[in-house]
Image (cartoon, rainbow, N blue to C red; front, side):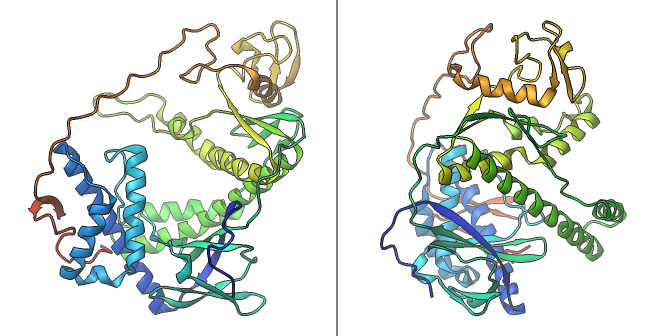
Length: 443
């Protein structure tokens, strides 16, 4: 059995994910706990938004107190472990602090995948049963078997149970006790991310692979056609969606494996890795627009979005950041403007130099090179340039001012009563009540 105490705290944190083997009763209970956590999240978010509308504020401590009171009235709340519900409110508090209550999303039953976390390491025990199997003891679940694909390799700090692709997984947050090494002595390299080749280095190395096989792509197309013929809410539709999820689960695993292997290779070789500061979430937004103002080239933009997401640009960035902790590599981000149409030899900027996706022929100095390699060299050379406060290079363009600070709204005493969602209505309930009438939280 592994030591789960906080003795000798220190070192880097890492994740270890394993496939769980729930019994039928445990799987049903996990679905129930996930539904309760979703209900707590949505009600807590609605509560925070209602307070902000009145110019008031409610935090994590007060919501936890009201949650404890609500358990006496709504018995189904007590079915879930208390620490799991408290952690849900803590995650909500962190999300609202970072993004604001109005930008945090609801957890919809048809889209959200059940997930919940056990934050107390003293209540988590791990044992190895055989070469291929181990088991973990979780509050209110008891002992649960999981596939022993690798040793945890450190002190367990938390455990997260999640459902993905028709299977349950547990992810342990591990503290391995290792300190980050000194700065990596290797050279500097620029990385260009593309939709044809996933990653190209300034040294001319190409990193790419196919994430879905030909047969899987055909099966995925047939399942999409079957999905279009199903009726919303039907059992057949749910079965088809589950089959699609199983195919895409394998694709996501291959993409994550490629990103991890590529990041480890790059961080072992280079002391500084330079990336473009790409905002992938903004780049992959839909161009459909609205009814009043419809978008243009929607089909082409949709294809570009799928290509960007398929190559996993942001996943590679996260993998590089994680791998750099163990190698001492420095990750630098630069402004991506004009890197693909700038000559890496003479510095001339001309869109006509980019003759095709793979060929770059400078119209000024007649230099010919692979377009991705040329862009990667520009990214590498841009690492030493000073960026303005808004993220641009401020060369040949006006320097943008920092956005003005938002004025704080006057704080008024909180009104008594919390609007709680009940169907499509908002009912003004006494302050001690946290959740709506006891309908099934899994619906």
